[in-house]
Length: 134
Ligand code: THU
Image 1 (tube, rainbow, N blue to C red):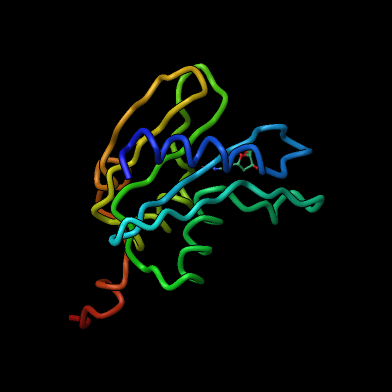
Image 2 (cartoon, rainbow, N blue to C red):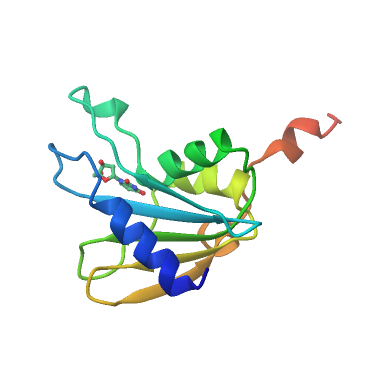
């Protein structure tokens, strides 16, 4: 799938966002290693802290479908400048898409590109859990 089509997939996912409290709708689309696209939207709770971001909904949906590594991520919001993923989502994306290109887009065609490494340098992952103590 081309990066443009991945943005289209995230834009469509955004229309499914359940965001009655913030009114801030987010769509995410992840491309797995075999080209499969998995989508997510943010889902808010009346108990606000239980809200789940679009990026993590997408990663968790992908895991349910049997994918554990993604090579490209698109995130779409209706903002003047594209929205970068929050810290919690950067952590989850780092664990399941460490080599990914992250494409941020808005609804008017502004696109920004980053690598996961740029968004989360010195990330924490399973490697640290395996490292022996001194
Ligand atoms: N949100 C996301 O979906 N992804 C992010 O990376 C940042 C924030 C959602 C959560 C909440 O529903 C709304 O945006 C406002 O924070």
